[in-house]
Image (cartoon, helix red, strand yellow):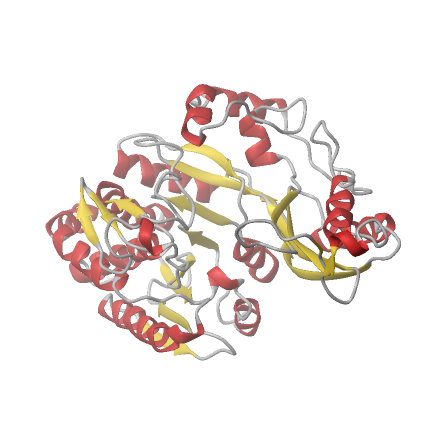
Length: 455
């Protein structure tokens, strides 16, 4: 029976690439308020794709950008129900001058399609729609019930997604969720991600005098806010990479020996890693490998810092204020809420006299780890092996996907994180691209997954 589905996918590869190109041409940048018409156009395009695949599709208005859903529930009550998530919004394409071809004019070069959103997440999300369409066009039915939820605000924090999912808690009850917004481990080495780091994100602003001051007239007589901020931030992390926020490591679930051995068995060349980043040496928490630090250890990072004069040449001032953007990547079982409060308290404690501090809590989510021996993970492993001709490896991911925590909290289900792209596909960067071979293999793996889960 599946042979017909696979033959259909092979015969329609060119058509699927054309559909992807059409999807990528719409500049659905959710962070840009000027792109509201394009966001609505993209939501409509997603609805059309879902309807063409044979699903009942709807556009749901939110306080922000719309959420598009598609449903097919005729496999029967005994068949599993799969909730498939994706997002149609993309990152801003800047800096434009670093793109070889325009970001919203998808071009194919050397077997890759170049455009903003090619991998993150339009190219990956569409594989599941095309896989469902292949089943419906050939056999007229699926072996599982499916619910698609494709949102337009992932790149700006998914502010309205949880409210929508909570409102559908009973209606969207499911057995497992599927998300393709991660990556393969390496070229020709597929992977299933079974663990994610969480995150807390915040901003700290320190203010001194009520205006920029002449550093010759006032320097040494008032506290310099940039000096103060850098001194405060230096109190958060020690030289050995240890984070000094009180209670930061209290709830960390340590890696098992089995996982550490599993990580060390993966193909990884430290010399290549350093060469790719053009760095002399790696750095991080003592006692852990680079892979362990990236996937399974918590972090403290200053993402941006500004204040004072930023222009060309000197300007001798004591600035009025300074700001730092901060994130911490968290691991199971750290609490984003508790540690955000602890970080704020620490910064307040070390804030020097003459400085006023303001603290903004942006967002946070917890880290997650799933049991890879379960039926759903084994079904996904078989489906990927069929499509890629190679058994996938099980990996963790250093990034955060808040919707995965939402699925666990709201629906009580685990999520299969199935990435078809590569970390080298320039996600969020100029010249983002997607290998078409992985696009087609990912679509095939998705189609096979419905059969495996249906068993």
